[in-house]
Amino acid sequence: MKPAFIASTALLSVLLGRYALADDDCREPVNDWQPRETLRQQVEQQYGWSVQRIKVDDGCYTLKATDRKGNAIEASYAPASLRLRKLEIHFGDNGDARDYLDRPGAQ
Image (tube, rainbow, N blue to C red; front, side, top):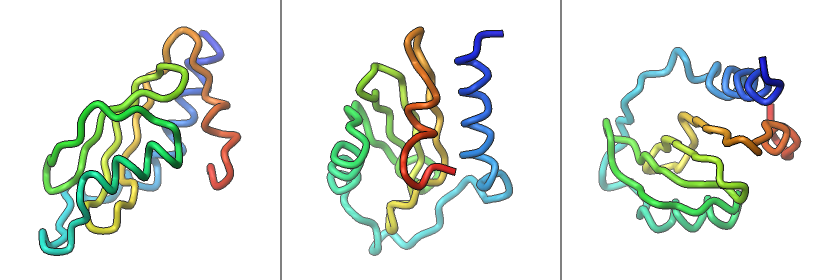
């Protein structure tokens, strides 16, 4: 197996493991939601992602983006707190999970 595939699988297991038992739907009151633009600015400034789309799915903000290396990102956020609920990274040929594991706060 390719080392990048093994590393990306391990990364996704760690990141998604703590959300496995959580309900897939977000249930925050619409009046408490933050604007989509706030989420866009947050991920672009914090992670350097280029956001293509943010939509509402099952009451959550779901975004599609690419990172600085062109890896595809799919993420789900709680719309009021903008807390990350789910993250998928589809690494390209040059993708490396260490880019995400070496970040401060990565678990």
